[in-house]
Length: 438
Ligand code: URA
Image (tube, rainbow, N blue to C red; front, side, top):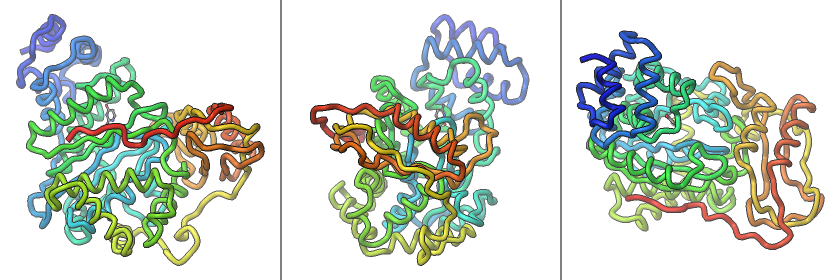
């Protein structure tokens, strides 16, 4: 077997065998052929696609390039959620303890944010002391005892993906359904959950802006997960506007944990509540803990309203050495001072947000990365108040910007204002849950 023959075969539309795909992934990871040949291979895949069998083989080769967690010793059904990412997406911070309280075991490996999208790991680092790295044994022990644990994906999980992703990033091959599927699923399968729920976001703040591509990706994720014996379900959700009001690390963590307090399900931002309870209910239903969506949703609401999920969240954070004080304002987390309030320039209905720009406004203050190695300011943030369809009067507050430096806050405010479109006529609200594949 040699790499040139494999590139040639893919270029001429032949279906590659499992062995050929493994040869490419293992060979590239072990530096056995040069980067330009791997770039050529990736580009042929970009143009010619992959069959479901090829996509599964790619996923398997990437998965087996690193460690896989053995969750067979967990005493309950294991489940996880993957979000394709967006602005203000703090759902994992509520979802993990809610699902644990419903009887699931949730071992979550999370990533960092890049560009306009935030990462769960960065939000957790806003909690003093919270350990995002630990040995697999301890991670699984916490998952068993508490029901959930969230740690960073170490370099030992799907290392082939790390190398291939870096090359895709510089060879214009990121936006390719089989390559995205292999990348996402190799990492998700490595954590070993029996059930995987995908929150597939579409809209101006999403990684997938195109609905057709999003559907193709959903189908490929489901098919690949099933080939590996996992129970899969996809929820398509709107990312045409930030989720919840908070954008930024400490303030998103505070918003998420505060929403979990008993009684706050009714008062917290409703888009965050509705999407979270829907995704947890899917995990509960698909895992077989409850037979249908209605009963699953009722269970999620029960453990949310009676405060058990809130207590579970405190136990989980403590088990990972995070210091949260539920009796102090903002749980004792450090946030930047209010630098300025952005006011509506004229009356009208909020019609549109370029949500990507809202995420980049955080980067203007040092709160998001433009490059993987960029340091982050975890304390700055934006509280964005209206939603699409809301009526605003001139001078109403659109956003509060929290930042240590006024100049940076002004840059963020300017970008945010430019990202908004107002209408003089009434505008319908966006549907949050667009569709699902069960
Ligand atoms: N997220 C991933 O982990 N990989 C991709 O290729 C795209 C999004």
